Image 1 (cartoon, one colour):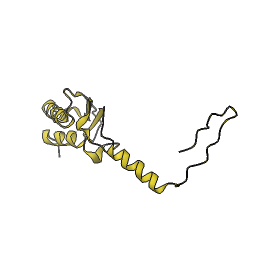
Image 2 (cartoon, one colour; image 1 turned 90 degrees about the vertical axis):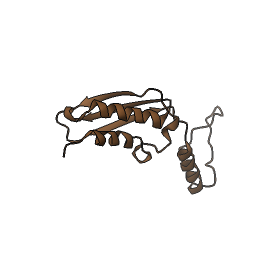
Image 3 (tube, helix red, strand yellow; image 1 turned 60 degrees about the vertical axis):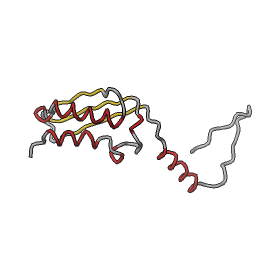
Image 4 (cartoon, rainbow, N blue to C red; image 1 turned 180 degrees about the vertical axis):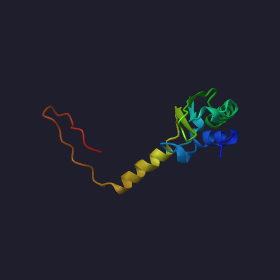
Length: 124
């Protein structure tokens, strides 16, 4: 089956889904975003990339998503990489920190100091 325009649009949209992100977060507050689409040259439809980029602009509220393609004649897959920066939603990180604190040792580790009274770093 040859990948079509709609499949490429879907791949681009899924690339910013929470389950696809390195760190699950809400990308709607991103300041900047970039998109790279990779696949065989005949599968990299300009119209689909443009629609996918527009959709990313809507999802991220970024005014202009930078984008490019990476044609690879030997590729068997069609893929999209989305990079976002300026994320302000760290609720998942806060949840993880709270969970670590819940599971961690309730007593703080004793702090040792150097000869000059400066505290030594403690392992996390």
